[in-house]
Length: 167
Image (cartoon, rainbow, N blue to C red):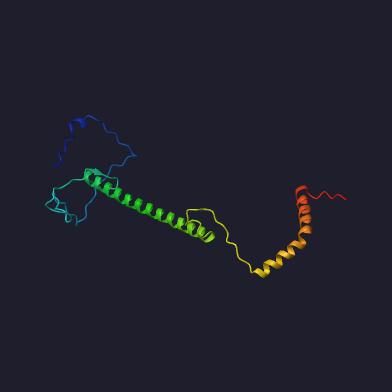
């Protein structure tokens, strides 16, 4: 099996013996060692009639893959990411819609009817008071009107000019 004579090129290289270098020793195999067959059996998974695709690209972990498998996995990944993006967009749209509905309900509770009509001018409704209260309040207003007008004017001037304290 092995020739004991060295190769002619290797015979020309001089060898030196160094005490710092130890040559490897032959390993002993266990008694239960069995030699691998020269051909592998067909794979137990997959279609036995399909054309065999050999792994061309080998990763660092030792996984071999065919370029077609890599392209298929990339397409599946893209489809998965697209579905997740669509789902996220739908959730954001629903969230925005709920916020708009909540704000609209809040606005309607503050000013009911304001958003439901085309005219945007609101007029307060006047309450009709009983006639007996109206007449008695008008007569009391006429009696106190001259004094109240003078006091109101003085208070207004004090507010505008800051109470000068004359007199």
